Every structure is written in structure tokens, then in C-alpha cells.
Amino acid sequence: METGNDVPAISIKGLVKRFNGLVAVDGVDLEISQGEFFGLLGPNGAGKTTLIRMLVGLSTPTSGSASIFGRDVVKNPIEARRLIGVSPQEYNFDENLKAKEILTYHAGYYGMGREERERRADEILDFLGIKDKAGEYCDKLSGGMKRRLLIGRALMQNPRVLFLDEPTTGVDVQLRRSLWDLLKKLNASGTTIVLTTHYIEEAESLCGRVAIMDHGRIIAIGRPEDLKRAEVDCSKLVLDIEGDSIPDLKVIPEVARYSYGKGKLTVHVTDTGTAAVKLLDYLRSNRIAVRSMHVRESTLEDVFIRLTGRDLRE
Figure 1 (tube, rainbow, N blue to C red):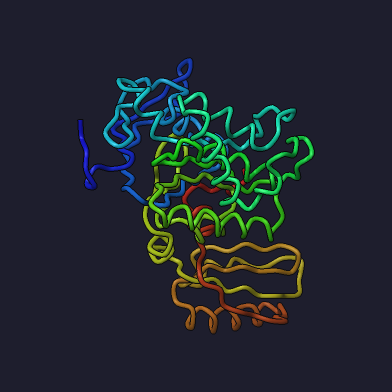
Figure 2 (cartoon, rainbow, N blue to C red):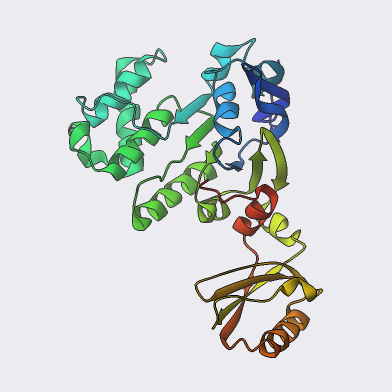
């Protein structure tokens, strides 16, 4: 069995999953290094959830292989599961239990002794900033507290890989950023984290690398800054204009694509300076008044939309 620091935290080779003839995951190859903060992005139905379910042992691959620190998830499922923690999107704990009980009961499934469970639960609650809520029943906790508790439960067995499915869904901006700080601290301690999220900003802020999935395949992978830099149209001109319609802007060679609605014209360009001059001249020649214009660099969301043709929330 593979051991050592050079062993990938996650290794996936030719992974396929079919459901009644439908290919949900189509030959995925992926390697995630130890200590990475890795983001998995894709529109609904892209195959993200199915891929994660196979990695955590909830679904059996049709073909291909996957391993966690060298432990095959099919051939050595028990060993593989002992190395992971999973924080699901939906609350799936008994809300009639107290916060600390949620953690200690869960740890019992991993054969952790009572004293160790109590100690570990106290450590986790303190780390999450909710130690004062240890004795409160879950149905009395706020949504943000429950989110933290889901993460805490996943940390009880001190996993080497943590899977987070939409960990900040339904929380306000302030709490979201607080959770980001917590996750950064956790990753800095050595925990490998795999994140699925609908928040592009979240992936850009947290992840060292991201993979974009669509139709069961990984269609792009890399550091967020590298993916953005690879965009053919590397910047956008955003204009506030007057008019119900606009002429075809593709007559300008530097225009890659554009969209218009409610007086806002967004134009993706390959040469910002040249495109700006030509665009203003062209709009004025068509008697379209421009109230303002500013430049915005391409974002990871721009990359995502170009590759999938869909918004991340679709």
C-alpha cells in the first residue's frame, strides 16, 4: 500500500458512473495533492455530486478507480472512509439532540472511546467558536450554528480529507466570511479540503486549484488565476447606454462576445484600448449615447460561463 508525503490525497483514474444507460460521470481523471484546497465547480447535473458520492463510498463506480491516500474506495472501503470527513449541504442530524451530543454520538461510530469523544468534541466546538452552545438543542440553533456543527461533526475523527458540499449555503455574508477564515485555518493545519460551491467568489478566495465539470467530464482544471489568464477575451468593457437595442458589435474584430439588457452593455474584448476606442466610435455612429464606461478584468465566473454556456446556479 502506498504511503508517504508523495502519495496523492485523492487519485481518480478513468472513473465512470452510469444510471440506467445515463452517463453521470464520464471517464474522469484527477489527482489532488496532500494539503490542497480544491474546488469542484459545475452547473446542476454536471456530475459533481455523483463524483463525490463515489469518493466517499456512497455509490459504486461502474468502471475506473479512485483512492484516498492510496486506499481504493471499492477494494478497501473501510480504510478509505476512516480517512475522510463529509459535511453535506442538507442538515441531516437529529435536532432533538444537543450540539455536543451530535459530535460525540457520531464519533462513537468510529470506535472512539468516551473520554476521547468528550475531549475531541470540546476541541471542535471551541475551534468552531460555538463552545457556549454545547448544551443547546439543535432545533434552537441558528442556521449558521448548524452549518458549523455539520463541519464539526465531519472533523470528529480528525480526517485527512474533508469534503464540503455547499458549506455556506443559506448564511449571510458576514457568517460566510467567518466560515472562510475557519476553513483556511483548517487547511493551513494540513487538512486536504475538497469543496463544491455555487459561489464563484468562494472558490476564488479559498481554492488553490479548481476543476470545472460539465456533462460528466472535467472540462478545465487549474489555478483560478491561470484559468482567468487563459481567457481569450481577458477583460470586459461595461457600458451604461441609452437605447432599447444595439447593432451587431461583432463587426469590431476585438469584440469576442457581448450581452445587453436594461441599459447595461457588457463587451468581452481581446485588446482593451483598441476595442474601447472602436466601440465608442461605432456606438456614436449608430446614435447610441454612452453615459459611462469602465473596464473589468475577467473573473472565474466568466471562464465558467464561456465553457459551460450556463450560470453556476443553473
